Figure 1 (cartoon, helix red, strand yellow):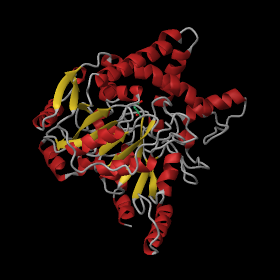
Figure 2 (cartoon, helix red, strand yellow; figure 1 turned 180 degrees about the vertical axis):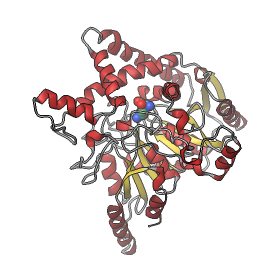
Figure 3 (cartoon, protein in one colour; figure 1 turned 90 degrees about the horizontal axis):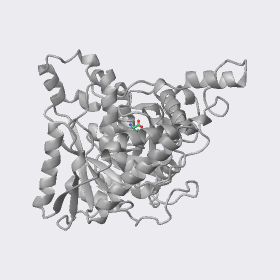
Figure 4 (tube, helix red, strand yellow; figure 1 turned 60 degrees about the vertical axis):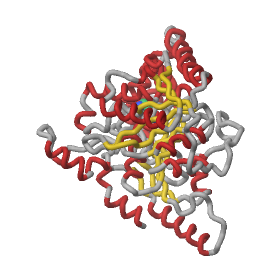
Length: 471
Ligand code: GLN
């Protein structure tokens, strides 16, 4: 009840596209009954959880924040949604995002941008008042980061205890950093993608947003494991129950600091927190060494070619016949397809379909798509080499800076910057590794800053243990 009333109070944040109040209340009632009758309880029994609106939810509208899917009601639950429900979680609603999860701001969905709850903190407001360039109150708010910004705002505003995001190039870790949360991207293959409407199948992973690392571990425990409906899931289930030790020993760890991540665009505050964090590990006896991931500078362009190529293919299913939107034009089937897709997709999605199809043209395929796949392998091998040399965990920034004001973010040149913002996160998706962003401190402006830990493939438990120690 309290979470539902907070959802109403914070409606102006635009965190939710759909609030599933009736469903949540019914589930709460059932959970209470189980508790009162002394029945065994699931790991998430009675816990309010929100789900990004690109996961299929049976009987609940699933839009991907796109005109194309407005009104689409899936007939089945994504595996991760079903697992949440099986463990007794309460489904609070579906959260806002960039259309089809394409973006890093949560500003590009058809339901409008998500506002960062930290925009309204007392400390930030006071700082802004002292700033002569600050715009009027109404338009002076910060982005959440994205594309899982609705999920981040929902957890950060206390409307739920955890939320599912998706992470293809950083979409869970980026908004977590901007909203002061833990944002966890599991190893590719550990958690089923069945029912997660695809952006880039070879990189998509369901992500978890929580307020502390332990909560993320509990949710991961509920979600991880092989799924016959997703052939890319691994067959070795992780150790359960998925508990983290309360006092980890980090003195035997080797922490790698990738030198290529010290980019000129990195804010001095983030840089100084990053080096303080390294010092902390060192003072506990851990070995902290500089390492090299030499192909880092190719990561943004490589991701772009691979992402748009998979997008071009994935989006072909939205033809006006099978799902959601269909336009009125009936002169020919082709004209109907074209008009439906023109009306249904925003310019970001259409732009990616166009570039992807360009890279996939017969004459370009070898030069772009195949080359990008080779570069992806080099990027993944950089990580393998570093881990093979004895490094246990990498420590990096998550984003270039704290969250920026919306009006600044939507300026043309900042769009370019926003794709640069993924510099610390995208390579991890191309390599399929687990990574977690955790909040470390507040900036001078009073805004949260996150740092990222990256682990070996399928060493998710070790990664979260280190993150918990640092938290
Ligand atoms: N910002 C990246 C993109 O737009 C990543 C998005 C994501 O992880 N879903 O492709």
